[in-house]
Image (cartoon, rainbow, N blue to C red):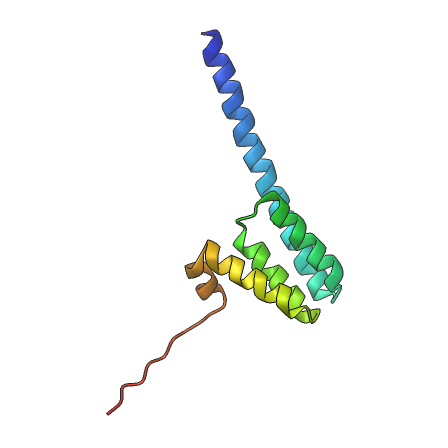
Length: 107
């Protein structure tokens, strides 16, 4: 019984930790988007970077930071973030960037 209580405590702490970090990531991304709208690109980059610190697989944070780097004329960093996002979840990136492939039938 004692071990069951300890295991349950670890499960609760683990779930709370994931919930907390998930909210922190979203907060940093939203903060970064606000800075982008205000054209405060340096602060936006900082916010998106903080979101990535919490989760290095956060595709949305990489895409937003790539856009900020692009606006800041940091093309290599922007490209690196787009590539990282594509490696994590290529389908999401294609959908998010609204990439469409059109084929024409040659007659």
